[in-house]
Length: 297
Ligand SMILES: [Zn+2]
Image 1 (cartoon, rainbow, N blue to C red):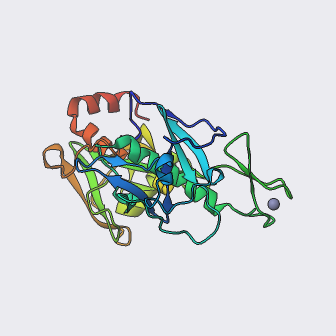
Image 2: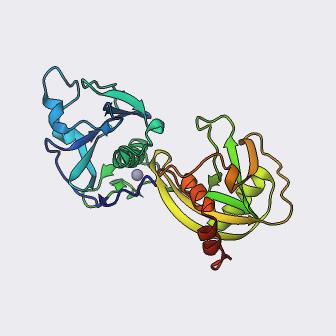
């Protein structure tokens, strides 16, 4: 999955740091990021030192405008602070603006992971410039990743929105679906946000009922994945069809949903998403069956 970057180590500890010449600079404008794509399809983020090259960069070089966010091994990543001004499409020669939804590839997995994580923080900072309770400007804590209001003492931590992904299985088949009206056109598993007051297991049952009209049992947790472009923490579950397998499609959400045998599955593990990893796990018949039999609730 995209977060599996071993032997490299992702270090998200909050620190106060100044950018150095080798620091990786992540510049966003809405859902676009400034990035260089090399001929071999690897990705490269601009370094702080590059911003100084005359006639190359049209980006501010003020150190205080850059905020340390995390490291991957010795690479330190910095985000340009959101000031509330109209954002400019900065230019750096050799780099171009790419939509972050398109950045999910194996060649530079840790860069894609870093950009997604940085985007989650970028959204959080720009959505919380002012206190939601009293309207004053929020202060950035120097001790932790937290914003606070001097006036009313309101505190705000980064937003993480839990959502479930569900692999519904029935004998030797798995349910795969396509979303209606979304950018992502490939086959996926059922998915949905955890709602207020709900357990993740209840979300699994509700989403499967809402999207395809089926009941499930033996819900078993598999793995999770941070998905920063939507501030999600994805929780992967497998569940078994309970009763009749007749699908009633929610046509607002889904374009199609069908049962696929292992031989007929149209999508496989891509090494990036939890959804695809779960498909790949289901394909390993014996390993999957052994795991699923162990203590499914
Ligand atoms: Zn306040």
